Structure formats: C-alpha cells, structure tokens
Image (cartoon, rainbow, N blue to C red; front, side):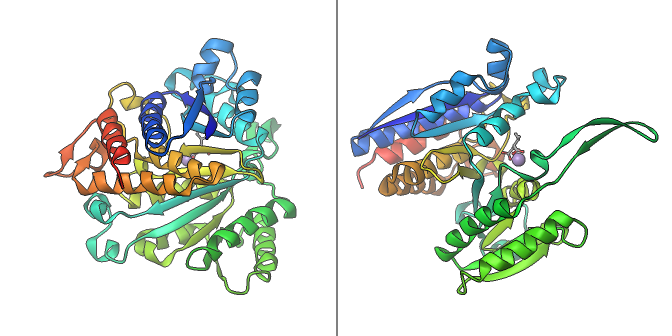
Length: 360
Ligand code: IPM
Ligand code: MN
C-alpha cells in the first residue's frame, strides 16, 4: 500500500530527530512492503526565514492532502523577539487548530531498562508507570481572548481560559474511550477550587462519565496532581487535562520515565488525519550536534502507523525495536548512565531501524 506523509522537520533538533524517524519508517516500508510518500513542507522558524510567516497556506494544504503529519519541533532563540502572532510556535498552534486536532494523546511509559535514568527513587519506580495524558489541544488559555490594554497601573497583558461544554465533552469522550481499552481509571485534572472554567470542566466530565459506568473517575487539582505524580506515578491510568495543564504535566511525566526525549504524542480530531510529534521542544542548545534522543519522534511515527493508517503490526514492530535497542544498552546522552553504550541521535535511529528490518 501507498501512504502519504507530510514531514514537518521544523527547527533546532527537529531535522535530526525527524530524519531518524523517517529512517525507521523506511525500514517498516521495506519489511512490510509498503510505500511511504513523503513531502517536506515548511513550518516554524524555517518557514519564517523563507516565507515570512510560521505556517504558509501551502503547508496546511500539504498536510490536508496527506494521510498523516510527522513533526519534529519548532522554535529557537533566533525568533524569540518576534511578536506572538508570527512566532514559530504560532505555526504549530495554528496547524493544530486548522486541522481541528483537539485530542492530544501522550503515553508515558517507564521502560524497565530505563529505571536508572528516572529521577525517582527505586522504591517508587519499582511499581512501574504506565499512564497516558489526554490533553485538550485546541481550546483553553492557548486560544482564548488575549492582548494588551491600559490598566490602572499602566500597560497590562492578559490571556483567557475559555472552555465550552462541547469542547469539554468531546475530549472527555476520547479519554473515556481510551480508558475503556486500559485500566479503566480516569483522573480529571482541574483547578476547580479557583477557576470557573474548571468547575464547568468537572461537571461536564461527571455527566459524560454516566455513559461509562465501568470507568472510575476521580477529580484532582492540578497542583496536587503534580505532587502525586512524583509521589507515585503508578496510581495513574488516564490523565484528562485542559490544554495548559496537560502541557505542563506531560513534561513532568516524561522526565519521570527518564527523559523528555522519550514521549511521543498523537493529535487527532474526528478524522484519520493526525499529527504526530514528540512532546519536547526544539532544544536549540544541542541542535546540530547529533546528540538528541530520537526515540520520542520514532515512537510518534509508530503511533501514526496505527492511528492514521491502521497498520497495527507495523506499530508493534517499531515499539519492539525500541525495546530491543534499549535492552542492548544503547543510550543517547540524555538517558545515559555509566556502563551504557553511548550513541548519537543518528546512530540510535540506525540501531532501531536495523531491529525493525530484522525478520520476526
Ligand atoms: C508541546 C509544546 C507546544 C505546546 C509549544 C511548542 C507551542 O510545548 O507540544 O507540548 O505548548 O503545546
Ligand atoms: Mn509542552
């Protein structure tokens, strides 16, 4: 079969990690007899440098005409002084919004092989960690009214958290569906002791929960959740979060698994067209050094194969290859501990691709 993938390499370490993931997709293509047809539209700083804006219309069109989008990362110091609406990050946010990708799924799995890379004590990691952050992606404070105005004491800036019932309902439904395929437990994260939008969030989640009697629901304030995550991450199954809380907690969850370089994500919105990206940023400090960890992006490509193309066996092949390479002791700098075999970003990609190509 032939599949069209829009590959958005982006900025910083984006090109390096994406190239490693494309190498793994090529390995999948060879082993399973598929053809992946790649296009390389521009986004973020790379698009600003060439076209003046972070998300050219051609990029949106190329993504819409593809079956899935694979993205590296956007942003960097070069574009930090630009106004909010022309920053690289705005390109990514606008793409998520333009494609209607409201459901962001970020699985955080602690690999046995990486226990020593986790900053948690061994008596905590021994219980394991296998949770998924379901993050609302096209609403909340990221997209609410914002601006500058004259206040009593001079200029002020403001951003607004806004959620409609419909927006909460649709992301809650996704979380419940995911929970049904897992340990059937949802922790809905909010700040309902302070925020009105959180009280609507909580009431709406409670209403949706009546359709899923098998799923246990608890509500947790975001500050408490940040604490419970480091205390005992094994207690969580599905974390249902508004946009901003999901952004913050997924970075925390990632680090608990050993590195932010390990967590993939998928973003979907009612069609098969999904956006797949690592949860981390463009890491400008190590860009171009071939030291980044490509595993998050490789696992994002794996999520793409099953979620957008229904290629389940192919997804498993990539996940198994990642596992095998970790078991053999290969580590990028971020997850390296003395005694491991240190590899570069491109070497990690090649090792995983090699495992994928191996016969079953
Ligand atoms: C993420 C990133 C983005 C976000 C940035 C780059 C806009 O941090 O995907 O988690 O905040 O959503
Ligand atoms: Mn983030």
